[in-house]
Length: 65
Length: 194
Picture 1 (cartoon, chains in turn brown, orange):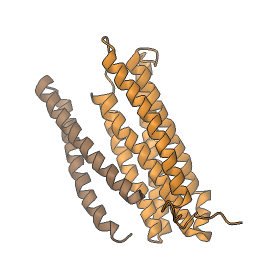
Picture 2 (tube, chains in turn red, green):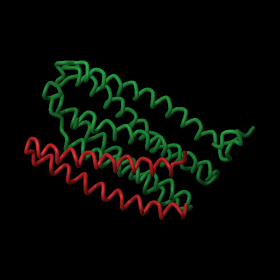
Picture 3 (tube, rainbow over the protein chains, first blue to last red):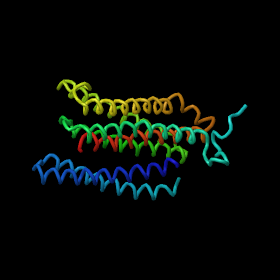
Picture 4 (cartoon, one colour):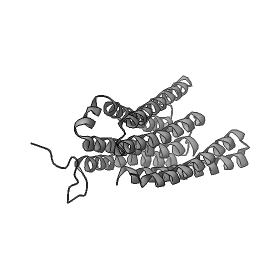
C-alpha cells in the first residue's frame, strides 16, 4: 500500500472517529446534561466536516501526483 | 556494489526494499499494540471493581487534532518532493516535526497533571495500562521525530544525488508516521471516552 492510499484510509478512520465522538458528546449531554461534552461533540462534528472537505480536495490533488 | 531495488520495484513483490521493510515492521507493531489493546479489554471486562479516574479530555482532543494535522503535513512533504519542490518539502516536514513536538509537550503537561494527583501507574489497573500504552505510543512519536529531523536536516543531502531514493525514504517515514497517528486514533476513545 502506498502513502497515498494509507493517507486516504487514515483520513476515513479519522472521519469515523469524529462521528463517534460527536455521537458520544450528544449522548453524554442527554444522559448527564454535560454541556462541555456536547461542545466537544460539536467540535468533532465540525472537524469531521472539515476532514470530508479535505478528503475531496486530496482526491483532486492525487491526479497531479 | 550497488544495492538493488532501492528505487525500482522488485518484480516478485511489486515493492522497493524500503517499503517492504516498513510494512513488515508495521505488521510487528500491529501485533505489539494489538496485544496491549487486547490486554486492556480483558482487564476492563474482567475486573468487577474497574475504576477509571477523570482524565483531561480537552488536552487529548487537542492532541488528536495535532496528530491528524501532522499526518496531512507529512503527506504534503512527500507530495512536494514528487512535484520537485524541495522548499515546500522543508516547510511541510518542519511543520510535521513542530506538530509532533507540540504533541509531546501537551502529553508531558497531561502526565504532570496526573502524577500531581497521585495517579501513578501503580494506582490501579486502568492507570497501569494507560501509562503503558500512551508511554509506548509517545516513544514511537519520539522515534518518528528523530527520523523526520534527520530527513529535514543532514539526510536531505541525498535529494541532490539520488532524488528518487530520497523521496522513497520520505514515503516510508510517512507510512510509519501514519501508523503512529492511527494508533492514537484508537487510543483516544478507548482510554479517554469509553
